[in-house]
Image (cartoon, rainbow, N blue to C red; front, side, top):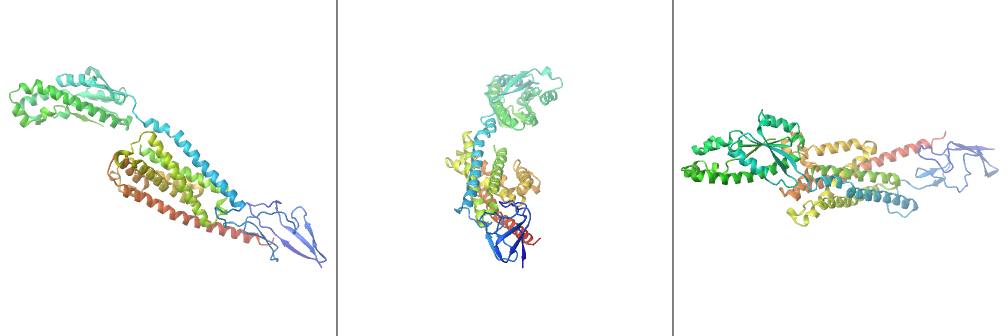
Length: 487
């Protein structure tokens, strides 16, 4: 009497056996000769007693439905990172080669590409910009200021002044302002009409209330043309005019007050006429470096994720081992990348020693390391849930939410932006200013908040990884149940 039993291998889109099984096979067993196996069709299945290796995607490959026989295969989610099995060794080699190659390539990029930007800022500005001096006064003040300022050496990065006759501007100061807006020159300095006459009248009456020294000169420039260069040259011009004002005060005292009968009266009632007869009235690495820091962090996240996928670690390692690999890899990679980033800043002579001396370099390095961890581990956590397909959307949110609170003081922004007090960019920026520019020392608070983000990510990464692993196991079990149903 013949009997039949059916064997149905698991059907998985992502798996094919070494025999390329694509359909179930039926086997006929004869009670008189159980050693013989007839295949239908013969091309679909090897004999049961064959020693040929068959790969599988599950923990075990189940035999016939009414048989207790099992065929062992490599287990998913059961390997430690440093296991010595051939499969673990191959996966570890792929992962380490991918991560190390990515870190090495990024290090080379830091020194080969970033200097393009760093070089544009280092010792800049390197050339002078033109400015016009227009004397609308025509008196002693105008003549002195025009001659003294135009004779000054602008250096390699200042303003080169050219005296332009007032007749070219029949509309007065408004015409000069229009010329600046039309970019015919970068800056303008006017000696305003009546400056000499008003000063002489105030001196004769010994009345400082009738004379405003700040109305004698006006410096103007189009800040919208370049908002970074304007404040630099404003400080330069202010320094120049301070020197001119001092020289004019000395000459003014010698020519006028020394021969005046009411010297004591002037010095007691209007000393500012002697001390400052003229003055100026002006009109209207850090930020971009933070964005670069975030870009470097994201690059490490992408490289690490690609390395895990290439090595198959997400399915091979146990949950604990996978979490440890992700965290240790991030800490080590950011440690070296932050060092190279700091060395690049040092190469372009960023002064780390203004507040903390030689220790400033190490503090700045640790700040960059902590900052990269705060920004990068948040991305590392979210890529677990969002995958590479959707992580760019979170990256946009992460960049915008940090950038929007790092450029201006939070006190002048709408209250909704006060979340920035707890955000990484704001605290990194504050710490950098304290180290490099000796502003208020809140490094303890800044480092505390930054490290708080690191701790938060060290909690969310295991939680998110546990959730994803649980979902993967449930999906695999469901697939196994479906595959075990006879056709």
